[in-house]
Length: 430
Image (cartoon, rainbow, N blue to C red):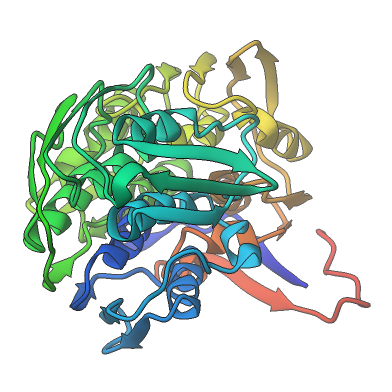
């Protein structure tokens, strides 16, 4: 069993370097299945979702070789479709990109239904709608996604998503890259990782335009070739450290970022009184003398990201006055609130809105990381709390944060990971 133990109260100071984006990396990794050639990916984060992605590809017959700690060579020339291990696939949400990649390359797919964080019902109906528009017959039966392209190859089509879906946009983009003819995706997601996937595929010879807007056009090609490609920095990791600086009355320089991707986060922090200095590839965050209340609504990009909901809620607890945080993307996103209440937070949930009473003084308590971003929120609360906070279920955090303990320790946090045998009790908070 693994735990994080945090002794709160330290101010942080120094530089934190952000790793490659989790949500971009996993999409690009599974898109490599389309390519019968060697791919070299740089700026790869060392997180469990990425390692699981590589293990899935290797189980399918691909060759995966680390060249450096953050650079990986992938060769899917001899990979076979329909054999991704179910137990691996069910451990991560992004494994559904295999369906698009298999349909695009082999004209058929057999992939276990995805897992990942539990935010209530997370349907893949828009993915299926896109695949069917491209000429595939798709069914979800016995825990598997089954699909077959009529005539053995997908064909281009006009696709309109009923709602904005990052996963469906990326999955259909992967499938359409080698479809016969032209595809137009309307009401497409505009997130940076959608753009990164399109840029990667274009580097391999795809013909994709419009990524980053709500209309993406794909001119199908017959083959794709290898390339060298660097994954973009992770804006959610960067945002997490920005909030950590604001919450701990600290000043941090956060490097290897694209400041434009952080605009919605920076705007809300500045609204609360936090000072943000933007430079070419780094930002400097200086905590406010007094945090001001604010209201937030999560929205698809370029709006405030749902993946920053728990971290921002933690910061709102420290602000003066009552703040309102509305979640418009996922159901059950507020499951972490009970954990914050254990540490002294006063929050009530009214439908899709959390009403946050400010001026909280967090106190140490044993808490859980109920999902990936909730785990980051527990770390931020623990950094502020009096006493020692223990966080269990940290496997969720490791899915998306590269060496979060090491990075925080370098800037002065008192945080460590403890591994104990199953039969032992974990350390209790003092």
